[in-house]
Image 1 (cartoon, rainbow, N blue to C red):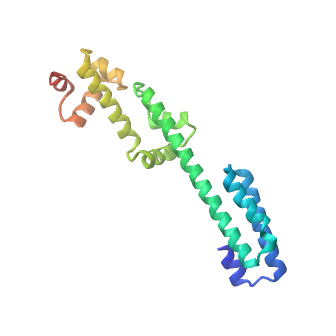
Image 2: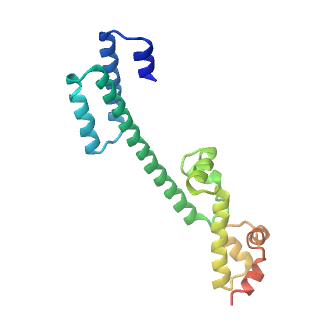
Image 3: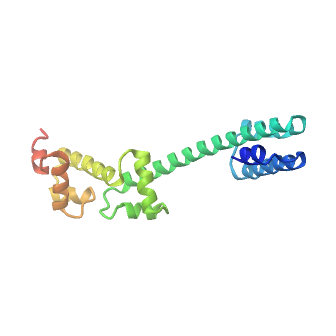
Length: 189
């Protein structure tokens, strides 16, 4: 867009074109200071900059565009890495605290200093299912283990997997598995 507007439409004078080119490089230098570049990328950009005096204006503009593309690629990889780290932290937290009946989208958003809307969208995008579905599936999986491997009463199991009442747990269990928790326990043998 900048090329189209400033080169194609305006037909800048040679002095203005040089000023435009150096302004674009100045912006790149500011960007470089704000992001972490690996050594190879940094050297590639540094070499491009050092060769600026020896090339034509059109080649300078191409060099600038290539550098912007490189920076965009780096920033996209960093964003993906940060997203993966955040997703892993959130999932770990949920897996460690699923038994808390106060665990909710709101409480997790607060814990990670995110808005509820952002966390909801982020979680669905990263995990392929919404937060409440993930939490319910996790709680159901843990409850099935307890039903199969212990003789704990249903109300205790409900409490241990994060349900505030055994009635809520039993409704969720039946909805998820098509059978009530007691019947499921009786089929464990």
